Amino acid sequence: MSSPSIRRSVSSARSLASKISGTSYAPSVCSDSETLTPERVEQRSSKVLSNESLLAPKPTRDELNEAVGNDLMAPTTDLNSIPCAGVRISYGPLAGLMAWRFVVQLNEPDNAFKRAHPAVVVNFILDTGSNRSRVPPETLQALGYKGSLRPGSEARLLIQGVPTKCDVAYPEEAGRLSSQFLLAGDLTLYMDPTLGAPVLYVAEQGAGWPNVSDIHRTVPPTPWTLKGLVKMLLHSKSNGQRW
Image (cartoon, rainbow, N blue to C red; front, side):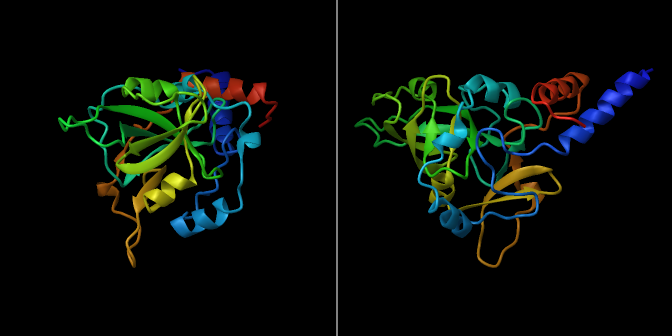
């Protein structure tokens, strides 16, 4: 039987989870009641020249992996298709941010032998406030990339099938997908009330949201656990939050 103190802690943690915002690191401009279309992305991103000052210190791969699972693995059950659902991270230093696990390949001309490019699963934060996507150099190394790994160099990738130009991030920096990724894929973002998760899909004219049965999750839903609730409580106290 749970003690009154544990029940109070669980109740407080759940209350805290409902108040978490997306102000840590990368901004999220899509609220629960808003659909972010490519047109809105273009309008907003045109006002953003650089958002790097808002992202210091930058999120790390370790922080993102802790929240959504290890990356740089060969795709098995991860489906390389859209529409797909991500997750809104509920606790830790990336609390409130939207993240996906995407299948990534090099987007380069095949060689004379038409050898298929390898693919890996990579974790990404969706940073709609930036107009440049960033890919960890560890991802490029895993793909056998032969170009420059110097931070800021450009690499061309297929991310979930979408041709994407990315800047090489610093070592151990988390991957981030910008408004350019949404525009390149003609993607629309919304919070699905049934799944309780952010969803990316290609909107057809006159059509509404996709059927829930057609949406696959790139990040499995995480059930509430005492360990997760304790992590939220510790994170809130370290940030001086009160509830």
